[in-house]
Length: 405
Image (tube, rainbow, N blue to C red; front, side, top):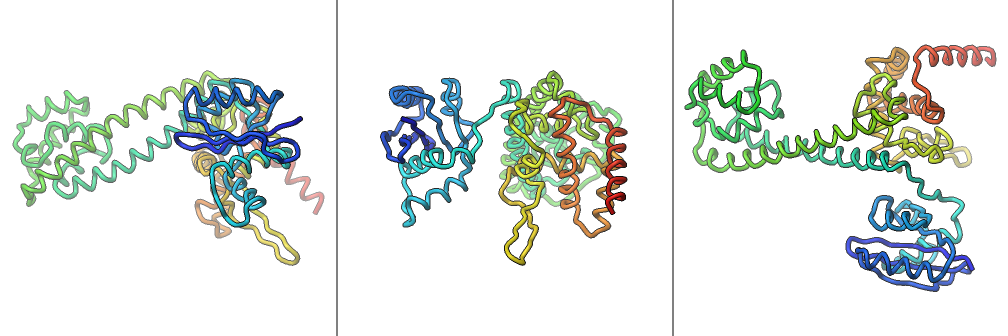
């Protein structure tokens, strides 16, 4: 008898349901989110025998890695799809974890052919995918903390924001550790300040004198209470930002190392305007499992650069795609934007769309739609990008259109 399994995962436990080919639930259990719980589920699956397909709503989880390592085929189900399926069994709206697990198991029983099994890339690329994900998260946290840091300085020590070329460099964070208030900074002599800046790694020696003169010539009203209170906030945020920058740099170095050593990474480096980060993110997006995508349209839809077409009777609409991987859309549109300075045909396409009345982001998204077709072919064939080859193909395409017209 054939069985299917569904797992509703949570932070500290998971509910599993196993149904037979007639849709009857033959086993349900709750396991803890630890190795003993995983082994308990594995024992039940092996007792039933056979290769039981498993449906789960997440792709990256310790339980997922455990089951894959044991040879089971997993089907990641989009949470939105899973929610719609539940209406089959529960129109009243009752929601429990066992019901959710049963619904996932029954999805594979009835509509397994409509879902794709989890296809993993190599270990190095999987590591790169996680690194890219954490890189984006830490970068977002860094930007948030920078705004908070600058807000704290504007409240009591605005001079510090004008001393260096940017408001978010390491020098300003380290300066706050030694001179957290305006009065302490102004009381420092030139040699003292020069020695401190050199010690914290500030190497623009000619600028040190200008910084000192700016400090001494500046004078504004400051409040002792503000200095006492907000200096703690600024120092704390500066310390956290320094740690974040260090870790982000560490992640970035690992991303670059994996990308440069991978054969497909070298392909993405040939794209105009790709650079280190874009190449790493494109490799993470595409992976190195050539079975993952069968057509460029899949990437365009999953990456959110393809529109949604709604047609019914005499009505026809083309609308923005909201249901997609937002991270992939950001990667593709940002790469398209970066290519404008290095790729003539991309700049010409972008300018043409702007003249047609498209906004900046929409023009970049339309350009990303074009780029995905090129990226897919390079990825599938392992070829390097050649601008002249692409321009010749564009010319041939235009000639064919003229003949048809």
